[in-house]
Structure formats: structure tokens, C-alpha cells
Amino acid sequence: MAQLTPEKNATSSIGVNLALGFWSAVLVTIFNVVSSILMIPSWFLNPITPWQGIEPYAASFDFFQIASMLPGFLVVLPFLPMMAAIHYSSQSDRRVFTLLGVAFAGIAVAMLGFQYYSQITVVQYNLTTGDQSALGLFVLGNPHSFFWPLEALGYGFMGLSTLFAAFAFTGGSPERWIRALFIANGALGIGGIVAYPLEVTVIAVLSGLALWTLVFPASTILLAISFRRRMRRST
Image 1 (cartoon, rainbow, N blue to C red):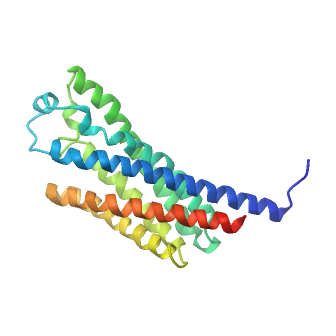
Image 2: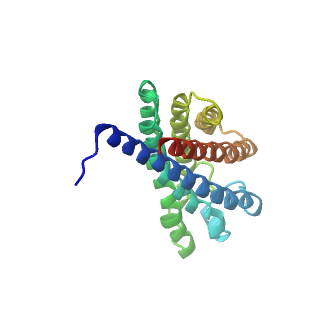
Image 3: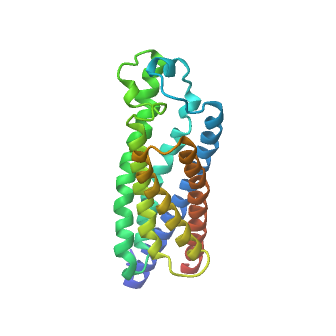
């Protein structure tokens, strides 16, 4: 069996990193767009109303209210590989920033993965079967439930992940746009962490979410394009 030279081995490793980054960015984009398509109509069909207790909430509950959490769960799965690919394909003097990005991505994936998986399993099951004891502390409809701080912290750490990773992108277009959008995503994530304990209005929260649904997929689309271009140059 022929052995790879160090140069060929390095080229092969770079190609794997770039391919992982490309496909992870594509999957993150697709699942994020699907999640947004499901989420935005639910704001109008099932608006968040003042909390009246778990019984009225359960009586009006249907799965469409949390349908966006299924693709939302799928968004976080390829997010960590995407950030790892950014780290390993970055210049060595920038990897301290991308490593921090990977670390924060791991925290975000753990928190949001637990959040969405529990919502589409435990919470959904108990709401639809009538066993509602203590669920008020976990449901989306209660602004003081565990759902909201987990959501704020999860996307806050995701924002910190992209904020640090933004320093890896120093080239021209589309890299400068990725850098700007990653920084904007970081600002939105930090804003969410700060805003939740201040109990800002629902309009402000939904406005931030609407902006995020534009900023984040735009950054991952450009990231996929960047990885694809680098894959072609490396062959």
C-alpha cells in the first residue's frame, strides 16, 4: 500500500476539514431556514399571551406551537462540527479565537439540544396526555419558565461562539461579510442574555428573533460558499 507523504497527508487533512465545514454549514442553513418557516407563522397563529396557568395553556396546546423545535434541534447538531472545521482550517495565529468558538459551541449545543429534545418529547407528551403536573415551569407559554433562560443562554453561547470565530476571517469577500455577520450574531446572542432578566417586552424579543433569522443563515450560506471555494483551490 502506498504511503502518503507529509505534504499529501496535510493536503488530505485540509480537504477533509473543508468538506466537513461545507456540509455542516449547508445542513445548519437548511435546518435553520425550515425552523424559521415553522416558527414565524406560529407567532401569529399562536401568539404568546399572558400566563394564566398550565391548565388553559394545555387546553389550547397543539404540536404546531413547538414544531419549529424539531428542525431547531437538528440545527445544533451540525453546528459544532461546523465550528470545529473553522478552527482546524484557520491560520495558526487565529486558532486561539476559534478554539474559544468551539468551546462555546459545545456549551450551546448541550444546552439547546437538551432544551429542544425535552420540549418535543417530555413536555409535548405530558401536555397531550393530560399529565400536566409541574409542567408550568418548563413550557414555552410561561415567560418565567426554565424554557426562556435556557433559550437565552443557549443562543447567547452560540453567539459568543461565532463572535470569537469571526476573528479567523481576515480575507476579502465573502470572508469579511462572514466576519461582520458572525459579530452581529454574537451581539444578538449577548443581547438575549442581558435582555431576559430585564423582562423586556415580547415585541422586543420577537424583533431580536426575527433579526437573528436573517443574520445567522446569511452567515452560514456565505460560510458554505467560502468552504466550497477553498475546497476547489485545494484540489
